Length: 310
Image (cartoon, rainbow, N blue to C red):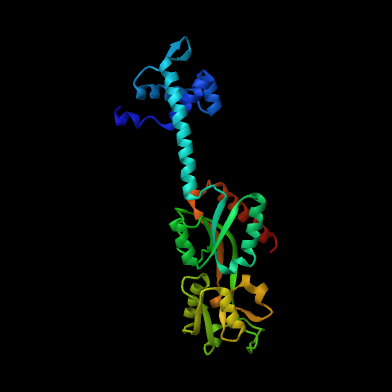
């Protein structure tokens, strides 16, 4: 058969054809598929042209299937069943819509945000297994782009995200604070001007983490390079060093509940005030995946609950 001709035989036309063969007339076919009668008639007519043999005859106002149409129907059913299996196997290979969802998150979000989302997901989809990967903003974004993660929960404020290809669901904004050892002598009655801490030592997250970018920007505004004693690869290690008196740092507010009794926290003065926007990110071509739809729904509920409590 001419390749150009077969290109015109689409699954849509075959679906209309099979429905017509089941319903027996154009009106009932149009109703079942929520199409116009004209669209059904056109699809059947062009399919007949593409097959290049008569499939129907007119008897009065009715269109009646010929033996060739019944033969074609048998093969259409086989083709659509085969394609359905092919689509299912392709989704399995890609890990889409299966009983496992691979989610990446920042370390700092494991205190409250991620547990809340996981609990909600288990209620929505009890059989779903969640694989959790923790890392920096940059690492998680690369893993999402490579397809090794299905969704990530990161700070999008410091990330270059392709909004044409990625779906972004905001969860909350988070303020950044100055964190100091409990033993440090601080004026807690005023906002923290970073220029007053020029002589202090600091600890920092490594490059690629969400808070690192804000850290660099704040000291750029302050007009000096802080003395960084060490850089670490997770926020818990960083704050443990602050607790131990190794140095000061900048910390997102979501860590306050755990560390406010052992670390002094000061709100930054106006020039240095900044926020992180925490969001769920996943590929737009996966937005119909039932597991990701459940995650997005849970994310919206979580964001709404935070708004109601503020």
